[in-house]
Amino acid sequence: MTRKPRVVRRIDFRLLPRPGTVLMLDGQRYIVVGSDLHIRTDGETVPIILWQSRCAECGQPFECRTGLKARALNRRCEEHRRPGKAATAAGRKRVGQHIARHGRRRRKAS
Ligand SMILES: [Zn+2]
Image 1 (tube, protein in one colour):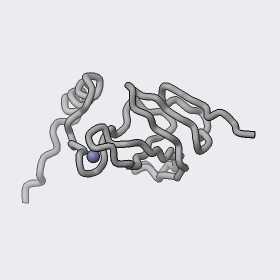
Image 2 (image 1 turned 135 degrees about the vertical axis):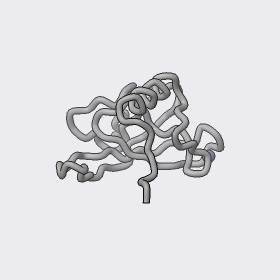
Image 3 (image 1 turned 30 degrees about the horizontal axis):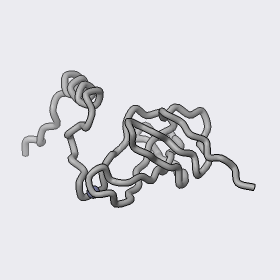
């Protein structure tokens, strides 16, 4: 007997989703392949979800990770990823707010 995979449309979990759980995000399909623990800079340990998807650019499978709640995920493989360049308007807004609050990262004066 095969169990139908659970399909969700956003990353908003209370508990780690079981492997095989499918996420549909803006037409891109992600599947849960596992989990991990992450130690934050403040020392707290938080669960991490491991996702697998296919690059929006070349179709190569790639993996990425998020916490139990997240607004966005990588849409491209390592090769086609464009760091600092958000794929969505919401992402661009978030980056702008972060820069407004914390300033751009500057090199320390030596
Ligand atoms: Zn790619």
